[in-house]
Image (tube, rainbow, N blue to C red; front, side, top):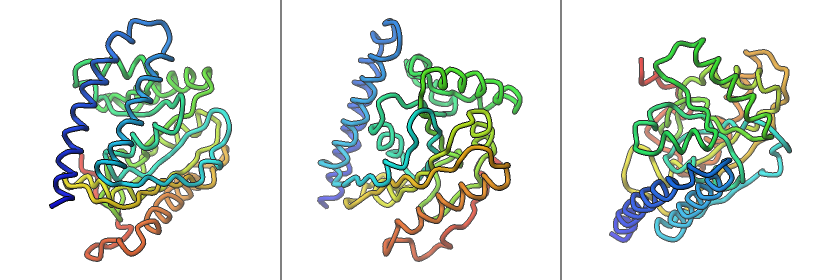
Length: 255
């Protein structure tokens, strides 16, 4: 009963906080540069992490942050929960990220994303158009010495399973010419994408040994997937679901 009440309260605060920060971002869109807006959004993600800890009872543990290279790099992370973005973004001052254009359907959000320098990928465009967009945005990010967050599966994955990693992460790795820092997590145990109810307990995000630039596609993709998926399953520990095949590859939901 207590967990249900906490979940309902958290969901209400999630909605109210999101509306407040989106509306508050509107006047910041008119200011030159993105610094003020980035500070505002950083505050939003940290407030959300505060609600996660003190309302939902999710204790966030960050490991291995010292492994992330200095300067521009790509953070390729496991995506199990709607909370992944809040958790990761809250740790960095000026983080760029890759997202689909579906978020532009929400009022003001499209303008906020563009002002933040997010890499918004047109899901309906062809592969050539997407590659050109990514190249242009990568050049902008590199000029400003930014780290970039990407979820290489392209979808929220159920706990213990994964989708085939998209080749776009290799294209970014190759074009950026910088290391990729894999990131594993078990946040899906606490804030599952399949259910509205949150579960109190520890949630870990762990940054792993970076992958150096210059690898071929097959080597890079295998190494990235193995690192993220193996460690994400290990982080489940005794709470790993017993009724599924751990590590199972899921069919693309868009196919």
